[in-house]
Image 1 (spheres, rainbow, N blue to C red):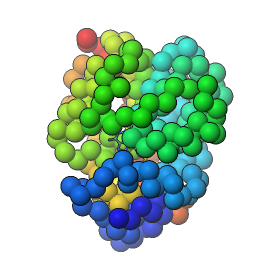
Image 2: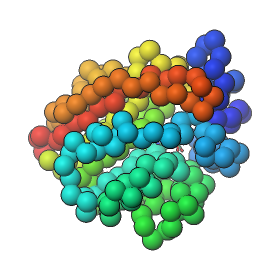
Image 3: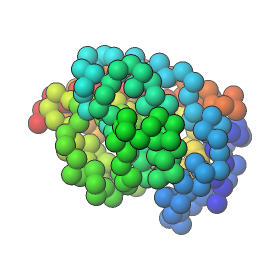
Length: 229
Ligand SMILES: C[S@@+](CC[C@H](N)C(=O)[O-])C[C@H]1O[C@@H](n2cnc3c(N)ncnc32)[C@H](O)[C@@H]1O
């Protein structure tokens, strides 16, 4: 299995040199290997400019005490930015315990709650109190099976009460077909809106992310508000 971190810009627009076959993948092992084998700043999704996400979060007008759940957070520096901005109730969840350990080691374990769980087979996440904002950058697009997508959106709908928000940033329709050696399901604003029937679109935009390698990956960024129970 190739666990390189998306730093190759090949002709097939793959983030990595080898695509693995999904049915044979132990995803927990895959992601733990990725985070074990690469410095954070070399990961193919590492951001130095988090303004697309931060700008959308500012549109929610949520209080600094709002419960913000970052799903598939990995070891993202978004958490550092949110702590720096004064947010006090942050939860990071990921399939990779190694990614969350790296995150805790960097920011200090008392500053956030970390939950190791699988968004496609959630156990702990099913029982958490409601969240005011669900943030996903580059996670949903890895779920290519319909049943996994259904589980993801069911969990999201359960976790967010009426009045809450969801921010989804995924590979757009013109982006790469794989990332981290795994196939991805790409999205448009319309496709995301169709999945979020109880939500109303607040804002969306295209953003082209430049990887540490210099390769470009177009994303669709969306912010929705839950308007029906
Ligand atoms: C491309 S990385 C993005 C990380 C982070 N959101 C960011 O923007 O830096 C995808 C993340 O999704 C996590 N992930 C993949 N499948 C998952 C699943 N089934 N449940 C929870 N997390 C998952 C991976 O461990 C990884 O941290």
